[in-house]
Length: 312
Ligand code: CA
Image (cartoon, rainbow, N blue to C red; front, side, top):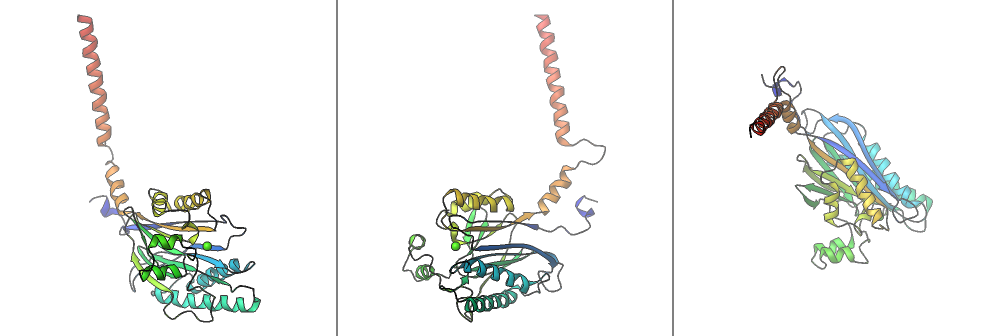
């Protein structure tokens, strides 16, 4: 029987590791709120085997005084409560309900306190079950997928400039530099009802070594895509999240910066290599045999040299 067949559980292709970091950046207060929570295991498909489940989210609040902080906190708390510890099978439907509830809660709070500017927040969230990820967003906090050194923006921003790019009136680079780049067309809490098409929902399947990044827009002005890739490649999720935030701060980010990173860690490969690396009991592994052979050759060469030196 091979080593692999002795494993009780069928090996999973990957496990997910998560990391999160947030920083005030160049502002007086941090209006971003983040979440990276491990939930009870749940099946990715009805009737299927349960898989580790994570809820990840970034909310970037706005408003006068402390309203931005309040709005992003309300969004994350409402999302967390709506998802619960054992989310049902339909993550898309769950997010639609949670985002509606968050919108209503924040709008009601804004109306009650009556700040000089309307209270609102972005929200990007991901539910990960094994390798299956459901992403939802409203606003301009983003989800990116890093796969094989290529970075893809999963979510589309709900901004004036993103709409202009979509209709060909601006290039992505012009949008990035536009003075109107922060003008949102959609946010949670800015109206009594969320647009019926929202949140936008994206489904993806992670492959081993993929990284999923959720982040607030504070990175956009100071980090290029190449920086995001370099910060995540070859680093575990907590180190990648920390480095992204530190890098943005070093580059003088004017805004709050938040990053939540999920890393699809391959397990099947490590199971195979662990089995291959463990030599059967009582026998020598190949590297040890090579080492012994190398020592024998060196000793023989030295002996021949010494003998020949004595002769001549
Ligand atoms: Ca921001």
